[in-house]
Image (cartoon, rainbow, N blue to C red; front, side, top):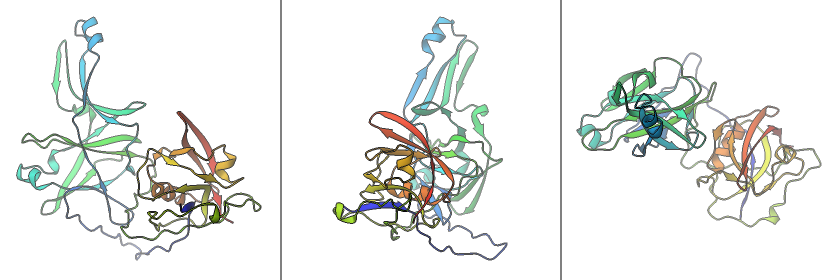
Length: 325
């Protein structure tokens, strides 16, 4: 199998003239998009069909004083897409939605309630003196909407968003199930990097720890025929000294490590081969590409929080990003 060593390699970036802001190419395919470092990143929506009724016993015990709430739940504590506090979205309704009159005015931005293994928002409640249906105004966030081209809508927030989990909720009518486009917000988060469909991977066998620490030899590993390479804008030589096998695009529940640089940053933090990295600085990761990209956006010498799983236990360690030798 091919052995991929996650070392960031410098790639030159295009520079625009001072005072000029490059305008993203408007999407043509249906869907929800967010402005990225280069172009647009598509947010994959999901049908909002799993509803859970809570507080039933408490409501009965209090003779209806405590309301029964109906929540739409989303799996996982964090969304895959992480954006800055003032994201810009673009929305193109699908033909069936457009035919039903759906547009950006039907989108509602909701702050999600965060639980250890899920996120949720209330869509109905009933109790003594209270009955409601739909998303309460107190849980909504104000949006600005405009049609920048026929059938293409630009959506922005009226104010900067606080850190947390959010969702754009779309009620589509005409018997169609509602859709949810979820995302997380982090202060000073970089714009998402739009994936290049045929980019080339830059990998290095340079060590990340002390000068006498050597990474495993390429002879120790067989090739992986489906390991597609990627090129990313990165800090030169940023590394935590970990190795992964497989295709950079394949999604997993965490990125499993096959080896570490002896004495490297991850090794010194107590991480071991076989552990699965789940998140860096609360940015959850699902592919080798995402892990490589996340490491590359941290300058050598900075400290990051790495959350990882060993068997069924979750750990978190502080790691100082290394400089490849």
